[in-house]
Structure formats: structure tokens, C-alpha cells
Length: 328
Ligand code: FAD
Ligand code: NAI
Image (cartoon, rainbow, N blue to C red):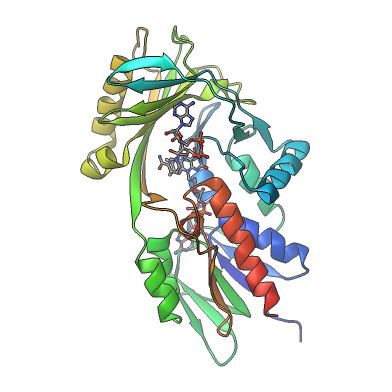
């Protein structure tokens, strides 16, 4: 009888990093995601011919292994450098803020990386896993519709911490660690203008009540839509305070803050789109790498195990796979 596959819950960059490492080591994996597509917080939205990165805007590579991997992604055409005209805004004042930092984006969208990593690996989308339980030796997953999936030899939970704790119930210590992680929300708003705004701002770190970051999507490599497209991110504090505001009201307020800040006339946008990320980033970084109960065959990974960034999530997925392989 062939060995049961390894289940991976979550197809963000952490889950896919683990999946690729296990696949390359000859292990069979089966992925699940509650969404209709992979990518998690690296995913974007399509509006006609325009694509927006609504979550992760770019990423940096400080770890040697991640930097080498990003170079491979670049060679494959999945990622490219983004060197925006960077600004910062303090007390409502814009000033140039260029630096030497190498920044990367997926091409033609952030989710191109996760799509390429997923490749032909077996995945079940639109499937929210609500429970993972272990029989005598093997694991079964149960989804929100009550259907069972399995058996699996091991399980890797690669969801944000608040969603991971319930799935880690068979290992109460791991569940308690995940439950201890608080994550902050972020409201994101995308704007498309028919006429390019008369500004040379392409990215801006903002220190404001409402705004935290703004990016001119069109300045990223590989984005060749027709509109002048922008993404605005609210600060965690503002997002928390306005968690239940309607999308229309959030758009109006952030668009207002943007128009006040940017150094040009802002006409009415052709379209707007708002998205609320409930679990955008952990309140603090950790040094767990990944969580493991090797005896049970239960693992957890995600950005919350390291830094709340793309790099941290990828490294965490590698660590979960390494620890699992070590115990085979
Ligand atoms: P996720 O991407 O959240 O993946 C988890 C997956 O699990 C999701 O696909 C979800 O649908 C799925 N899932 C959850 N629960 C279940 C369940 N019960 N059953 C099945 N599937 C489930 N990082 C940077 O480096 N640079 C940036 O500029 C940057 N900007 C950001 C801006 C915003 C607004 C946000 C939200 C994040 C940003 N980040 C940034 C952080 C970065 O996006 C994350 O660190 C990284 O993408 C997290 O990857 P992950 O795989 O750990 O989790
Ligand atoms: P990074 O090194 O570009 O940025 C780190 C932080 O340094 C920035 O947030 C900013 O405050 C400051 N900074 C960097 N360059 C600057 C410049 N030229 N001028 C002024 N300030 C500058 O990238 P890193 O460390 O990879 O972080 C990734 C980015 O992801 C950060 O911007 C972070 O805020 C963002 N992020 C946002 C989340 C959200 O929910 N909104 C979640 C996770 C990450």
C-alpha cells in the first residue's frame, strides 16, 4: 500500500514553500484552501484588464537562502525588481525618500509567484478545513460542509495564527502558542484613474492617522493596464477603529486622505475597490521558525512564526518541511 500523502492547509507562500520542499524530497502532498485561488495575502484582484496587489506590495530578501530562491524566481520570470520613486510623508508633508534597498514584486502580479509554486500540485479550493483529527496513526480533515478528507500521514497547518489554533487542537501546546499570537487588520483600497495623476510619486511610506502606505501599481514591472492604478493601505490602528465601516465609507475616507496628501489634483476615479484583511500581520515578530509535534505528525507554519513578511512566511514553510522530513 502506498504511503498516505501529507495534508497542507493553506496555499499562501508558507504552505506552498513547505509543499514544494516536500514534493522535491519525493513526498506526496495534498493542499487545501478556503479561497478559490492560491496566494493568501499575496493575492490581488482583477478589475477588467487591471490587476492590483491588495495585500503584500513588494518584498525584500535578507536571508541568504531566500535571496537565492528569489534569484531563481527571477530567472523563471515570476518576479522582478521594483525600484519606485519612493517618498515618505510626515505631518502631511511629502518628501523624496530614496534608498538602496532591493525590492521585489511578482510579475505580472504578486500572486504569479504562488501560482507558479503551486504548479500541478494537487489542491482543493473553496474548502475551509474546520477540524484535523488523528486516528490510530493517520489524520482526517473535516471541512465546513461536514465532508471528510484523508487519510493523511501528517498535517501542516499554514494559515494565519487565529485560524490555526482550532486546527491544532490535537496538540494543545501548539494550539496555545498559535492562540497567543495577535494579528492586526489592514483596510486596502484600490483606485483606477482614466488620466495619469500629475505626480512622480510611485511608492510612499506615510505616517498619518489613516494612511500607512501608497503605491502606484502601474510603476511595478509587468503591469500594463490602461488606467493609472493605485493601492492605499490604512494603518493598523485606523483599520482596527474602522473594522466594520462599509467599503464605500472606507474608500471615501482613504481617498480623501490620499487627495489631501498627494501633490496634484485628484479627479474622481474610474473605479474603486476596498478589501479588509482581518489578519494582515502579527503584532510582533517571533523566532519559532515553525511549530512541530513530530510524534503526532502535526506542524504549523506561517509569517507569524517569524517576521510578518513574505520572506518570513517562506522561511517558515521551509522550516516546517525540514522538521517533518527529519522525522520520517
Ligand atoms: P497567508 O498568505 O495568509 O496564507 C494562508 C492561507 O490559508 C490563505 O490562502 C487562506 O485562505 C488559507 N486558510 C486560512 N484558514 C483556512 C482554513 N480553515 N481552511 C483552508 N484554508 C485556510 N509582506 C511583505 O513582505 N511586504 C509587504 O509589502 C507586505 N505588505 C502587506 C500588506 C497587507 C495589506 C497584508 C495583508 C500583508 C502584507 N505583507 C507584506 C505580509 C505578507 O503578505 C504575509 O506575511 C504573507 O503573505 C503570509 O503568508 P502565509 O502563507 O503565512 O499566510
Ligand atoms: P522595507 O525595508 O522596505 O520596509 C520596512 C519599513 O522601513 C517600512 O515599513 C518603512 O516604515 C521603513 N522604510 C523602508 N524604506 C524606507 C524609505 N525609503 N523611506 C522611509 N521609510 C522607509 O521592507 P520590509 O522590511 O521587507 O517590510 C515589508 C513591508 O511590508 C513594510 O513596508 C511593512 O510595513 C509592510 N507590511 C505591511 C503589512 C500590512 O498589513 N499593511 C503587513 C506586513 C508587512
